[in-house]
Length: 195
Image (tube, rainbow, N blue to C red; front, top):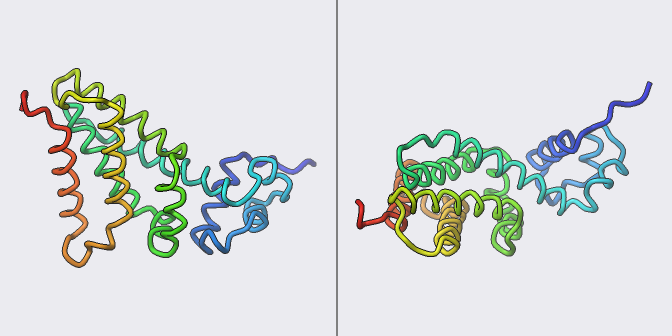
């Protein structure tokens, strides 16, 4: 009987479990292989090192959060859907066990994946934001302006609020911080001429 072949998602699931249990610094490809019940060469076939595995894991998890937040945003205007999607994403990341581990105990590593390069998760977010902003400009809810510039500023704002919650938790509840983010995004993107 041949052993069951594991998919990349099965290995990523095992990596998530390891990261949540041990943190990134203490997780090895050997740990992931053991938890996924595959050989180390099987893991190496997909990822050359733990950094590339963690990058793909972050991308997968963020895309799932994005998709869920976008699916929940059913407001009438594109601007309202953008604001809902962004605040929903931030809230979901704050309650996601793996991202909580990163933010609470390995923020410097998260900074590498989030702030020092445009990775595939940021590029996916920018694709989504560009499409939504273009739709908002067509329906009149989003102000005129360069779509790339608007998208990048929204991404930077959302990333900053997501990773900096601990800096304001002594004065702002999660609900108030999300409300402030919604107000900030609405103020930046709102087309005052049609409002």
